[in-house]
Image 1 (cartoon, rainbow, N blue to C red):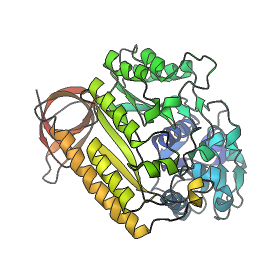
Image 2: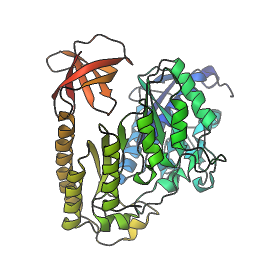
Image 3: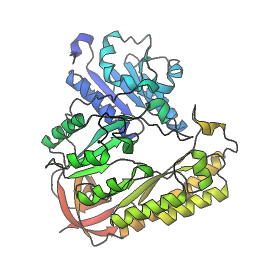
Image 4: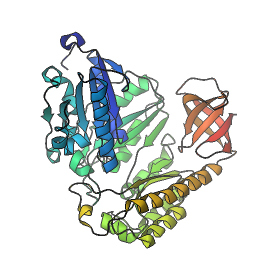
Length: 446
């Protein structure tokens, strides 16, 4: 790697801001590490810096708005700073971004790993654009170069892109086609994390279940990759990020039974509980298929936590359709649900559909589903009162009265507060779950 010294450019401080998914957060950390390796000092985004790197999102109109807001904030904080904008919004809307005075570099998703190379060319009075058509990418862009900070758990990106083309989703247009990371590169990163004392790794992907489909070795898939990762003795937990229902085949479900290290938590997007809307969304299942698969999973993995995504206000979602979704979510009983409103996205077929839903109605329906989600989440946690579990300690917090708690998560993703515990971050502690609250459980050491 080319080495850049901070004194060469009179630049000492760089700040980062990430919007959107965990894959974006992973990539920001990788870019940050490149800067640190090249001897730059990282500071908080709210501080005055010489370089600002904003990794954007474009999954909704609100994500677009927040991305531009963070760009303008960086420009306001230091008008002489070099502003670098990358990520999904940069990939799809670079022409609009060019109109914002003060941006030095707009780098697409395929150029994140070469941002450092452009530093000497950047000028605050002009904008360099490096955005390539994403649809032609065929190889995984491996930008991980090590990690300086020690955390309790670590994200490991193993896949990028998506071939599904749901009618509302812009992701295939800004992330490109499915691309899988080589097994040896993944294991090399996990080996490094194991040596650093990391106890839990979270496998990330834009379409995680598609891992291996594009690799020359057709025997490689997510299940077989997990069977290799479990051999790292120091890695005590392996967690999956969001995965599609259709990718949860018998082979993968059997891996949960075979390897205790695999966390009993699955995030499976539903999006709608009405078959008419699911068909308009171009989702590859109906509610009957979804319910049958969830029932199968729960029979195999008794303590599994199943969380989900629900979209509110998709075109032609009338009261009848929404009530079907509401009742289906209750029937499934998700451990937690992320609710977000539909918004038209450029190039997506759903933008052509008639009968758009009013913004006020979207807010009302979102509120109803959010209240239901809180109720179901509380009911899920209540089932574990009195159960002894392992909790991975992540941080220390204080309540309003100043009482100190250690905070962590269980294997099946329950947030736990442990009173009066003195211990190291990253430690696995056996506790008994005692009292459920709105979004956590209070426990005691056993």
